[in-house]
Length: 144
Image (cartoon, rainbow, N blue to C red; front, side, top):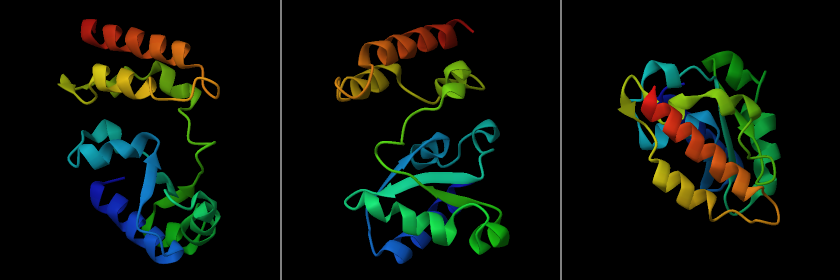
């Protein structure tokens, strides 16, 4: 998915939900910070998001511009309406050191990531384990 496609999905989601603020999660969220991200980070066909102030409207997004919708069939990409409770990193990301470096270019600042992990609710998330994973992956990426 390209940055222009991310913007298209966001405009469509805004029109559908009548919301103007979204939380974007998942692999394509990097395109918001890096509009010209390397090809390796552009392989996903979906944008995971939910309305920031009205997460319940994520179902509207899924129904109108989700997988196998006419939007998906027309453009070749779609939205996945998720919620705060489902917006977690999938297990396959644990082996992807490209979160930190792609083609020798730093894509994610480990210190910023650790700071944000520290803001998670300890009661709802294994913060210590997530922090340790991020530290390990960062060190592995630097030495790769």
